[in-house]
Length: 104
Image 1 (cartoon, rainbow, N blue to C red):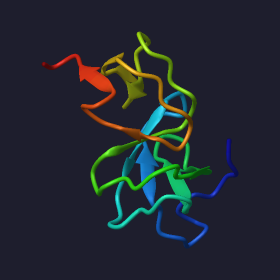
Image 2: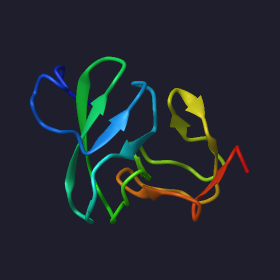
Image 3: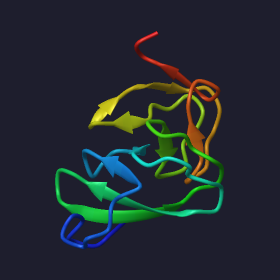
């Protein structure tokens, strides 16, 4: 996944992950465009990871860190957050069009 020294590297992260086992990250910058190489920071371990965005992802929304299968739960903050209703490839945009959240 990544290398040690997320914050120490000096680069502002494009997305954050709270737990190393999370399968989605939250975008923390504006204007993520398709094809961009995103840098992520794992808060729990202070590691970095990268993922190439397959499509534009808005600020505050989720990007897939692994291939996500329909019917399976994505993991955010170390918790299942719902069920995928459509598959999403690593780097894809995860939102209401492909995720039914546990909350609703």
